[in-house]
Amino acid sequence: MNIGEAAKLSGLSAKMIRHYEQIQLLKPAARSAAGYRQYDEQCIEVLKFIRQARVLGFSIAQIDELLSLWQNPTRSSRAVKLVAQQHLAEVEHKLRDLAAMQATLQNMISACSGDENSHCAILEQLAQ
Image (cartoon, rainbow, N blue to C red):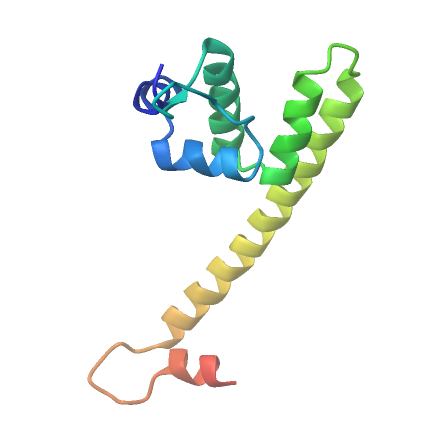
């Protein structure tokens, strides 16, 4: 199937498919006699895997590692779990950072009168 069909079946754009090939996350597609990319069902499964991993926020490096593990029948589930645990720790750290950011913004907004006065606590706090 061509790249448009592969994009439709995988839920990715043709641009992202070409990008994943370029960064070698996806093996280069076979080419037709006219030079067009041709994808098989295995490629579609890999693309779906990549899409789902990206939805969950895994980095390209983590996806590469997960793909290697997925394609290795002798892998241990321990290795897969470790990648997921490390990613969860990163997500939890980002959530803590976002919660702190939210609290700071709420405090800044509360401190600002939001009226016609030129004094603004938000700008003062940003300038500190």
